[in-house]
Image (cartoon, rainbow over all chains, first blue to last red; front, side, top):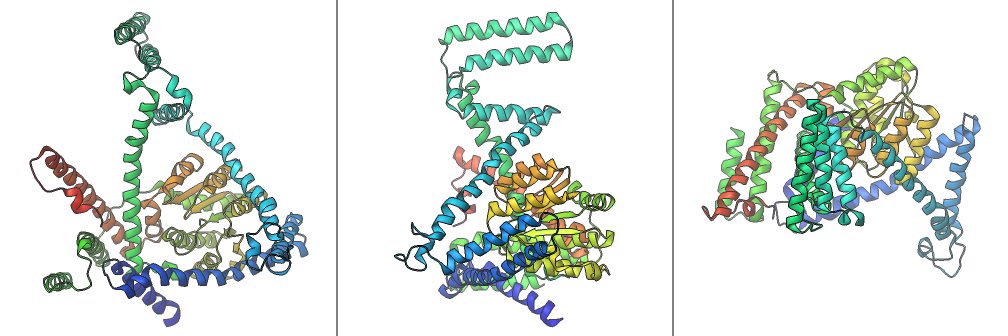
Length: 272
Length: 280
């Protein structure tokens, strides 16, 4: 129990306090431990731990092939890829002019070939899938179901259009005419009266037309209806306000969680 | 008493010339001590048996429903603890929630699949799942390979987890940890197989993707509160109450700072609160 419970908690408490309060001291020893040594220790541990992971991967995939579980053929690719990477990394350079160690980044070596022509395209393929997933996710998110979803849809469209070159060519007067149209549709839905709807539409069109004629139809005036300005405002104000609120919550959550670990109140991480 | 003694000692230390102390960080130092003190106060209150009201979090209630659904359908629960290592507090939080989920799967005799992208997370996850199964009295159901390593690489890991999803079709997918661009790839694939999905992360940029693609999302602090909610241990619930009080305090500080800043801009006061609060 002592080794599995008290000692780990003591280590977490001492190192946690040292890291926390080390930030307030100008002692080079403590600063060096907090900023360099502790993180390097972790990196060294993580580097050795990779053997555990690799062995586990090979054990599972090997068992799958030997017992011919469903989809065992895929495991052959995993095992083959693993062996190929080991050979390219440690056994065969493919270019004797390059020294060991430099062969992972130098041109003309097997490892670099594997990286450039197998690993990079495969990673790029996975990353490219995001484009399709963003489209399908956006479709679901932007469906008009309630007020919040409608706000999201409108904000999304303004941000998207306002950030492309086409957005800066759309006159703010066009947006104003569009708003008059939307306003009259809203009036029709709410009041169900054709005369009022027509009145709102005609009044709006007349006001915008007179205003535009007097102002000389500048594309970016009034700026509140100019898409690049509008998207900038949405991005820098409501968006940042919401993001900061979440950030404060996250910060408090991380702080409270860390204090729980340091004080030994939260012991779930050692399985208690 | 202890807090008073420590405060007195700190004042004496400051007056004595505070050797080795970064004077410019004193505001942050006091804030951290005040916040830690508040948390400790509420933890002690909870330990003495005080009852606290905590608002229900739908995403956490849904965790048990998700495991129950998997049990009814006879399909596994897939748990993804993020793609980062144990040096990230989100990964630690994710692994701790894994322990609670493992207790549920042990109770309902549902299979659990935890692909991980870091070897240390694999070891930590394995230990915590083993403990959970033992505590639920079902060590016979535990297998080492429930928590297994895939790869350290981000997109290779996403491809591996997607492969597991489309082959095994888990009824519940839980994403709890630190995520980057792979979040949407995972969540959309989970959505396409019709799994109930619950995500929890403090990765701010990934929250919109999870909100869009998952049934429930634990946003920021809710994610860190999950362990306390699921364990229902009094001292952890006390810490949550303390966290809520701190949030109220931070909100009040923001409003007060806003007011003081306006006064400063109007020239009514010379003191700039932003300079005072900015971390040096």
